[in-house]
Amino acid sequence: MDLMFRVNVLKDSGQINERTYNIINDFINLLKADYAIELNEENGAMLITHLCIALTRIDKNETVKPVSELICEELKNDSQFNKSNEIIKKLEELMNKEIPESEKGYIQMHMCVLLNKI
Image 1 (tube, rainbow, N blue to C red):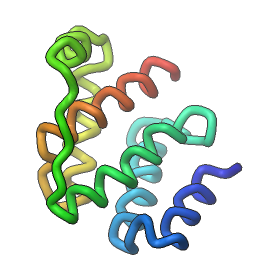
Image 2: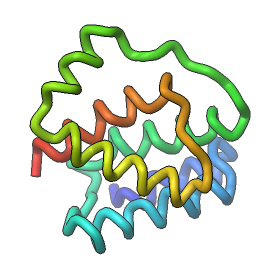
Image 3: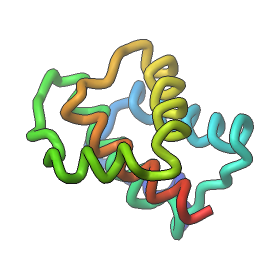
Image 4: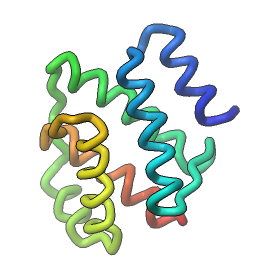
């Protein structure tokens, strides 16, 4: 399955709105243009699916329990931590909104996994 097919299914089923769809599409293009990261189903499905749901929660002002302190410490020690922070800041620019800290940890975890795979 193509990664954008997954995003289209989420949009067509009403799980994400047009705004989230556009942000995700722009984010995928940003990763390719700025970081030469070509997302596909194998390397990006978890990140993109999580982002779709997280952005929907953020738009609805819903909260999520933050990642544990142990995971936060592991993320801070990850070799891709700084790069993942940089990418998350660019995602916030695309969103024109700051990502709540409770969501940021999960997004950062997925970003570090992706960055360590490539």
